Image (cartoon, rainbow, N blue to C red; front, side, top):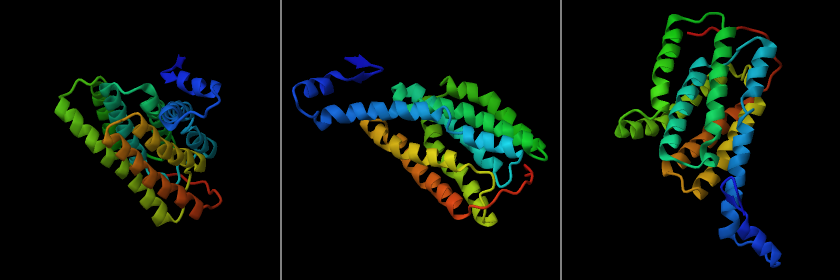
Length: 235
């Protein structure tokens, strides 16, 4: 009995015989189920952050560079997983996270007091290059180098926000729910990536996510303060 790449026959067969499924049968099934749970949850993971900005009409305390780098990182990671032919349960959340991250950056631009020329150049450059990367129409060696760099991209996507939080002693309009879901998703993805025999670099990316998302989540709890309306300039 197979559904969405999940083989239930082993587990059901053991249960029919009055036995608890062994780990070699159960762990792959759990991994697939958790993978699809992450994909399902990812469809709304950034929605709380988007709604918080829309409700307060403010991007106070948010680092635009951090969110822009997230878009770049998700694009490279999604393209690589598509190129490697990994099962959808192992990377599906990247598609939904990328879509939401692009919407989030657009909302941040809209509610910023001023969007400079450099910001528009970065946006146009992304629009020009992203389709080629997602289509995998680049040299394989360059593709591997790009994917290797996306770990650094995700790391440095979090650093500006972590630093902004630290210097302001406030997390501004950061959403606790979005940060919590990012942290939890990274933890679960380590397990599913190992079970799906994903490349070591994929597992490393999830571990970096645990550290950086965990730091931001801790800052939200530490610096929790009442909201004060204020705009944020984008350089």
